[in-house]
Image (cartoon, rainbow, N blue to C red; front, side, top):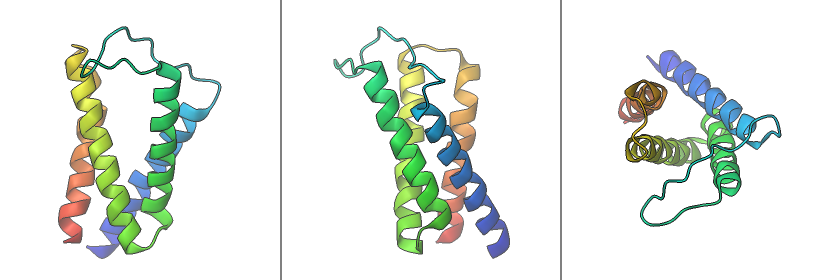
Length: 116
């Protein structure tokens, strides 16, 4: 069981580190959205950069950090995935676009529950 949880932690951490790094690269442009969330419209490039850094750092800590930082990074990534789902819902995106965020959220919650 411990080996499975360690593998899940490494896979999730690596996934978030890679997606965060991709958001920070010049290859991917920020999503163009004219919608406001909570009455606030962030600059798309700044928003993408902030999320990219959070995903990259939290993903690396999930893989390489000590247990306490792994728990904190798991919580941070869980909140990010809930925010992603909320954002997709508020933008009225297709339900198919929710699937990756829902799967990641489910795996993060599974990892958190099993570590207790």
